[in-house]
Length: 594
Image (cartoon, rainbow, N blue to C red; front, top):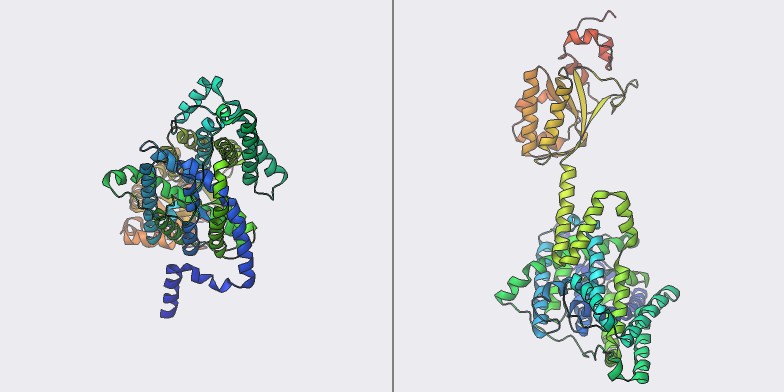
């Protein structure tokens, strides 16, 4: 037992010990190939995502190096690849751009502080075993937020795609307003480069899916810009380029721990924390469906937390699990998390070779790539399906999406609140449905009473849900309506198998209802009550008022003691006779004569 507990602790402190036995010559060969593929995929994405975040391009690549290694070694998924993502990048930009000039030393320092805090929050949540929190962020909210973020990404690149003079970081509605006001100033040369890049990217993705379409589009866009400059001159075209990337290992960095910075980035860090954890856990679970691997949400929290903590000191901004790179990693045949480790080393080698070429990459071409990224983020299929299936879910979707366009952080926050409010509204209204015993000989089950005769003195109802403080009034009113609709139905039996749990407020309501029905001359009974609920009622000292004899286990003879409490005069003239006892004798024991 002691050995087992030590092994369990070791696996949580050093989770990579769980898969070390999988490493062999074949797996290493597969991981090397998957790692090379991953490095080629992350190169253009890292630059693009850093641009979205308002960071220098190389910071997106730094976030895909050491942080990705840490997340792979200390997470639970064997295929999840961490690094910069579009949603996190747009969240970072939206949070920090009002506080500092994007790309400036102050901006970078504040982003590193946000990354540190996000990592710290993630680590604390993981150690506190709070992985269940991500379950409260509904899929609808994520779809709405992602779509809104995609529109913001596209809006942030309007100036670069069309060559317009629009201030960086202005709200979405200002971008739209300025675009229409400056339509006459669109630079045709810049726009041509962006359009060519966009067209080539779409064509490459559709017709040559095996090639990295982003790299193909970037190369063609850069060549188009070179030819246009050669023909008309750079002074006329005014085509700007990204600029050369820094070459080398990720430099050491230091977050800004001043009170003012911590105060300003605290709330955005919480938003990034939940968003990043939602991405990482949902992606790892999605891939685990295919790989048949068990995912520990708490361990993923720890891995992501350590990843961002380390990244904040090695020039990496906030990162999370990437669906694109994780999917590529799995499809490329990765066997262990070593594929991510290899990808980070390959990325460094590739960066050394291609970094100088970034000085030829036009910002318009990068804008075209980001338009492609933004389009791919909008889940049109699920947006259409949600709008058709559920009006309430559609409201959550559009509130989140439109709220994100107004204020990204508050958009997802209000989406989560609205989603939780809808959930609470649903669970606060458990179904209370009338049932009657099945007429089959020897049957112990019940059937819906709709269209069937019921006892005029005795109502059987099935409650599906939980009787907690939020549902107490609804359940109480449903029970009151029974005798208001038929004053003679003073006795009620609850089919309690569908009751999940009862809290203190629910227990008090049941106690009060039992007393009320006894005063009316009836009673409150329970059939197939869960053992945990019965024990809770006993612990809360409610059984004295409800009555120990009011609880009947499955397949017990519940009708005999209840039938004996009914009014024989009502039974004498009753034509329903839904119980076997009704045809044999009256409740007082008198034999039936007719």
